[in-house]
Picture 1 (cartoon, rainbow, N blue to C red):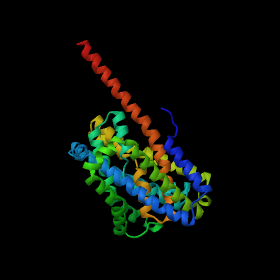
Picture 2 (tube, rainbow, N blue to C red):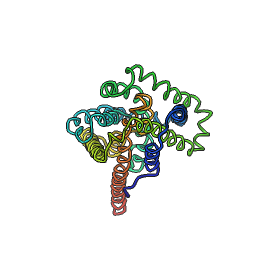
Picture 3 (tube, rainbow, N blue to C red):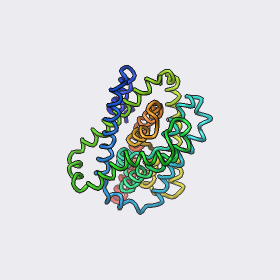
Picture 4 (cartoon, rainbow, N blue to C red):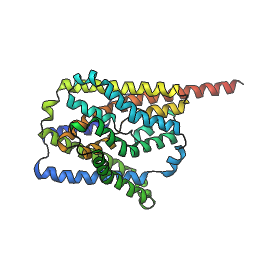
Length: 331
């Protein structure tokens, strides 16, 4: 498995560089802000239209596994971030570590979690259910956790205000998309690239506008090469602990291998697709760049590490199947 950035990560880097040298200001920034808000609304509309009720119902009965993943996502991660704060904050700065805490309170990914569970031969229906539920629960849980861990560092408004903003800007388009699924769903499924373009395009727009505002506020005077290295160490530490603990605890709870795979990949990942729009809604424009920087680094790191881990799980499954076939043939 090659450790190399994917094309989307390279585009993210390019957008950050563009914002660093040519930040949007004045009227251009105002127009981009409105365009970005519309793109994010379209993104969640399309995801709502794609949501399969049958897939969710197929996996919803496995409540112990789903509860484990929810607790891993919204309790284990924030606890790790909070406990490690005295040790890890000196590697960066208190302001940057706030972005780390924001990373820790985000929901799990959907697409990549399901893809890795499928690749590793885990419980795919349960993964679909858990990943979808994590995104929906994050609408309420993430603002609550932000109000506990992050409010004093740039989050705007109260918990209620944050939930209302997310409901209006993210969940309302999502709900409309789901309600109109009967009419728009077939078109969206037939044009899968459309969702990908909107996915990536909306995130790139948010990142560009966020980093433009951050550059104007002097982000690169606060983030040195040493700080970036320290942030990479922090992300690697949190990811390694999350992977170890989800694996260890799922085995202690007696999950079979398929459920363990689902628990590990759904319970150890954080969503860039949800996190960037949430940061835009929850934080002042001047602080969004700082909030999403740890998430961007963690995103690429989790993809590379989980790809290797999924390949190992798949290889183990192939070996077991081969042994079973050989044993059957010997009878």
